[in-house]
Structures are given as structure tokens and as C-alpha cells.
Amino acid sequence: MELNEIQLNQLLLVDALLAHASISEAAEKIGMSQSAASHALARLRTEMNDPIFIRTASGMQPTPYGARLAGSVKEALALLRGGLEQQPNFVPQTSTHVFTVIMSEVSQTLYLSKLMTRLAKEAPGTSVRIAPVPQKAPHLELESGEVDLAVGTFTHFIAGCRQKRVYREQYVCIARAGHPMFVKGMTHKAFSASFHVVVDPTGYVHEQLNPILKHSGLARSTKVHVPTFHSVPEVVANTDLIAVMPETLAEFYATLLPISIMPLPIVIPSYGVKMFWHERFHRDPKNRWLRNVLVDLYASRRTGNVQSQDQD
Image 1 (tube, rainbow, N blue to C red):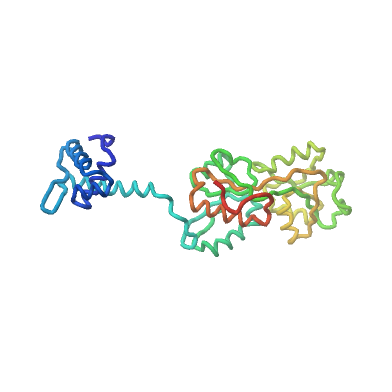
Image 2: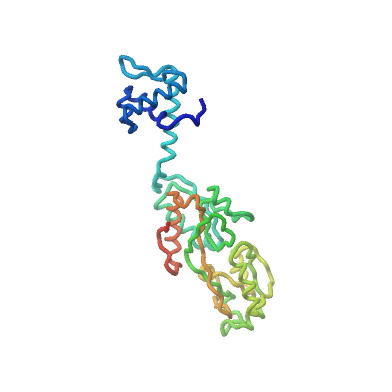
């Protein structure tokens, strides 16, 4: 017999007969009339060429073939019911899940320690792996579930991804404290005449910075290119080089190093720092819990109407 010839109610009947040994009780259990159940069993007997269940002094009992069939049906239905159930709630206090997050360096510097502090209190058994930004098709790692979330100013998480802005950021210029070119503050001339430390913008919103500066007539004379912002404040604090960087990160390093923060000589639009996740995991309890935790952590920098709970 072909599997596609079997009806689900026949399988439910076999499972119920094994449990109750009665046509009437089995029919009631699965919501069939006794007549319909009898007809379903009769069809199954014909299709299987076996009585499957026979009437005995102790009720309807399976034949050897019926017992084997009923055992397989029981396992199959258990798997099916498990698959149909709603996803279980995520219990942070008892979870041992490893959260994998792609985080920009700004977020790592400013928010990773806060995330770990929050997890230590609310989900002590969980751990975090910070994944690098893949060079190609980064959305595939979110799609597969290999990565739970991505947080930053990425420009290439598009296909199949949802996103939420967690706060708005803006660019500032940093120079060493007491820099002679900026004694009276930032000027168009001083910015253009200074040598710069420039960060590689590939894959980030910073890709848009150079075109904006050039369009406004602000050429940067680059003295050194670096792949990330981590080394920039130290270099600026100990040389006459200046740099353009996110205000949040500049404020953090200004508490550690003798650097001054100044506005750019032109107005540049602010940009959104966003959280990305794949549509497949939008309703996953673990993913949703982590998203809400991160939105809370970023709340001190958040502007606009970003809610602390995910919106459908």
C-alpha cells in the first residue's frame, strides 16, 4: 500500500484502538461516530490485507501486523503533534543557549560588557559568541540560524531580514587636546589642512561619508588607513592627526585619552544603528528575548519612537 493512500483519521483510529481496545471509545476519543470508525477500520483492513484489530474477550486486540503498525503510528503521531505545537517559551533562568551575534566594533566596545552583565543576572547559563561580519551574503548566516542577530551600521543585511533602529548616531571629529589647528574650534580650513586617520568603511554606513565630504568640498588628506576604529583614538591622542568617527565612540574614548570632540565643519545627516534578524526567527522565543534585551541596552542612546518590545 502506498503511503499517500492512507488517511490521517485511519492512523488516529489505529492509535486510539490500541489505547482503548474499543471501537466506540476510540471513535469518541478522535471525534468520529462509531459507524464512521467502523467503516474506516474496514477500509484499512482491505487496504492492508490484514484484520489489524480483532474482537476478543478483552476487547479489540491487534494482530501481530496490527501491533507493529500501531507502534509505528504511535511514534509518528507523537512526532507530528510535537511539530504542530507552538514553540515553547524561552526560560532565561534555566537556558544554556549560546547566542551568536554579529556586532560592529562600536557596539562591542560600548555594549558587550553591558550585555554580559544583563545575561549574568537574567540568563546565567547562557553564553555569547561574537561573530565577524562575513564578506559575502551575510544574510545567509542569519537565515540558517548560525547567527541570531546582527547589530551595527551594516549596509548589506537585506534579503529576508527584518530590522529595527535602536538609536541614531552622528559623526564628529576628534583631535588631540590642545591641537594648535583647533584652538578656536573646528573650521573648514583646519579640517582640510589636517592629516587624517581614515577607517576602511567596507560594508558599513561609513561608505557614505567620503562622497558626502567630497561633495561639500572637504577633502581628507589621509596619512594612515586602518581597518577599525579601535586604534584611532590612541593615534589621534599622540599625534597631530585627526579623525572622523561616531560620536558615541568618541565620547567613550574621551574619558580615557586626552582628545577633544568637535562637530564637523558641515552638517552631515545622522544615521541609524540597527538590529537585523531573519524572518525565519522572527517569532522564535530565544531570538525575540535577545532582541528585547538589546533594545533595552541601547535605550540610553535611543531617539524617536523605538519601543522596548518587538512589533509584529
